[in-house]
Length: 344
Ligand code: NAD
Ligand code: WQD
Image (cartoon, rainbow, N blue to C red; front, side, top):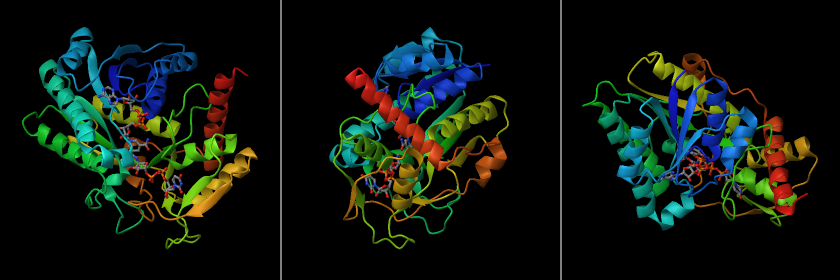
C-alpha cells in the first residue's frame, strides 16, 4: 500500500477518490486551498472510512508551500492531481485566473516531483478536449479539437505540459484520465457535490429545482440533431469514477503501463439526452422537475459519449452503477444538504 498525495482532495471527485483509496488501504495526504470546497468534507470522508486523511491547506500556486508538503511527507509515492478551477463560463470571464491556477499548480507539482523523486502522476483531464467529435463513441485517439473555453484549453495545455515534462525525466510515469460527465454522490450521502451559487451543471440544477431552491430548470435547446432534440452526454457515477483512480494508481505503481504516458476515457459508453436525464430522475425519486426549453447554451456540443473499451480492458474497470441509482444518490445528497441547512 502506498502514500498517495491527492490535490483537490476535499473537492467533488477528489473526496470520493480519497474514500476509495483509503478503502484499499492507501495512506492519503490531501492538499486543498478550500477555494471551492469546505474543510468539513474531511469529516464526511472520515465518517465513511473511519479514517481522517492527512490534510494540508495549501495553495498550489505557492511553490514554497507546495514543496513544504513533500518535505513533511517524504513517503509520497504517487500524486492524483484534481485541484483546478473548472467553471467553463467563469473561465471566459477570467481567463488569466484560470491559466494561472490550472497551469501553475501543475508546473509546481511537476517541479516538486523532480526535486523530491516522486515518479507517478495521475491527471484529471476532460472529454472537453474532444470538442464536437467526428465519430461516436469517442476513442482516446480522436483528434483534440480547438478548445471552446480557456478552461478547456487549460486541460489541453496541461496534457501537453505533461508530455513535454517527461522527455528529460525518463522515470516519470503519467496517466491522464479524461472524464465525461461525473454525477451523483456517495451512497451514504456523507459527501457529494457542493456547487457554489447557481449550478452550471445539469444534475445539481435538477436536484436544486426538485427541492425548491430553483423555480425551474432551463433545458438548453431541443433543436439538436438527436432523437428527442436535446443534447446527449455520457453521465458517469462519481463513485465508479473514483474507483477508476484506484485501478490507475495500481497500474502506475505496479509498472503495468504500456507506455510511460497513457490516456484513458472514463465514461459509461452510453449517451443520454437532457430529457432522458429528467425522466430518469423523476422515475428514480418520484419527484417532478419543472422545466422549460430555452435557447442553446453557447459553446455546448451536440452529442458526446465515450468508447470505454480501452479503460475496460487495460484498467480492468467498468462503470457499474445505473442512471436511476446514480440520480437517486444525487437526490439523497441534496436532501442531506437541505436537512443540514434547516436543522431537520
Ligand atoms: P472541485 O472544484 O469540486 O474540486 C477541485 C478542488 O481543488 C477544490 O476543492 C478546490 O478548492 C481545489 N483547488 C483549486 N485550485 C487549487 C489550488 N490552487 N491549490 C489547492 N487547491 C485548489 O472540482 P471537481 O469536480 O472535483 O473536479 C476535479 C478535477 O476534475 C478538476 O481538475 C476538473 O477540471 C476535472 N474535471 C471535472 C469534471 C466535472 O464535471 N466535475 C469533468 C472533467 C474534469
Ligand atoms: C450537460 C447537458 C447542457 C444545465 C461540462 C463542461 C465539461 C466537463 C463536464 C469539466 C448539456 C444541459 C445543463 C442546465 C441544461 N467539465 N443543461 N440546463 O456542458 O456537458 O460539460 O461539465 O471538464 O468540460 O463543459 O455538462 O452538466 O453543464 O451539461 O439543459 O441548466 O445539460 O446543455 O447538454 P457539459 P453540463
